[in-house]
Length: 497
Image (cartoon, rainbow, N blue to C red):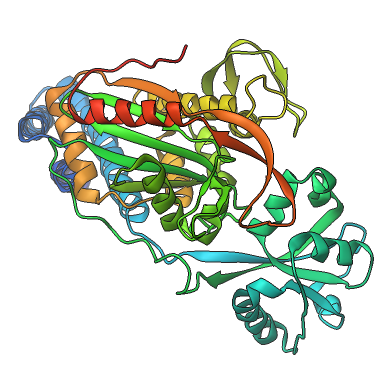
């Protein structure tokens, strides 16, 4: 009898200790949850106080139930403590992941160029074998090429002696004619070849063997830095750039396929999106007044795209927001797909996807080809700009919906990998806090500048007629007026249907 009593007493004492430890963990998680929300700096003081009060009430209720005499109440207390522990733990993880992602996307990285080694599609040799044979390069890119060669020499313990060619077309011709066995070239030059009728499908006939990231040279555009925060009640502009770089590294410079200027007025909750076609035939910041395609500015760094657009619209762009197409699919897939409206039934020229007039549900890959398509659209590059702006709106709608809670972690991981912005993190958290405090919907208006299609010699490729869009300056002036109206607090509507 005495032994049974001792065992019962010991068991009861052990249960008490376990319960106390469990309740202590519960209380610590509750405190940690409130602290994690506090350090995000996104919640208003009132909302944070309400959440803290709710956590205190939950802790008191659970403690009261656990130390009550009724077994049913103690069981209910145990169940509630487990549930609240899970809620607090998930909340802490979400807050921590959000802060880490915000830190990643708002810290500018040194820009790089992707120098890639290409061979003919039927050439199956490895890099070790290729390095014993002649390499081709662009004579104009000697600085970048030498930086890549130096890395290759160190990586493979060889000494390369590349042969120079004056332009990308002659470089590819020499490769296809078997004058050389491989080429080492900036990826942005290869994407330009898609604009030449004779080379539209050249990338399909080549195989990329290796890619070397080299620093963007000091003689090129300056490296981006974090801009100072603008007062929260003042309008600001953001350049949204979509790079066509085939590298998954967001710091890699590439020709800019997406060129959207967002003018945002926090007071009026007005957002104006102005799309400029990639083929707009305008002087670039470094071309000395000679016109070129806008997209070619991005190959020298995002700062050159910014300067070029500032010249075109006679404005100052406060921040940039860069997304890499190589990571775009991951964003959409992490959101579980998105719904986007199409004005037309069309088949993708560059893929096997088809799109119907009306709302289309798309996964990442289908969405990527949707925003890249231009050849099979009645309005060509203009319609592509419309698609890009609609994609931005669709992503924003999905992110602001309750559905984001179930996709939060994969979404944040994808965002951290393919987004970079010069918007200060404090400014972003203040904007979120202000939105939570004031509420209200945002009015998003889209507009695109247009022109006439033509074939012209360009600064980057003076010996070739490239497809360009000669600007209709009346649409540029309209865009300027719309931007000014938004900055002045006026509510605008798009003149375009």
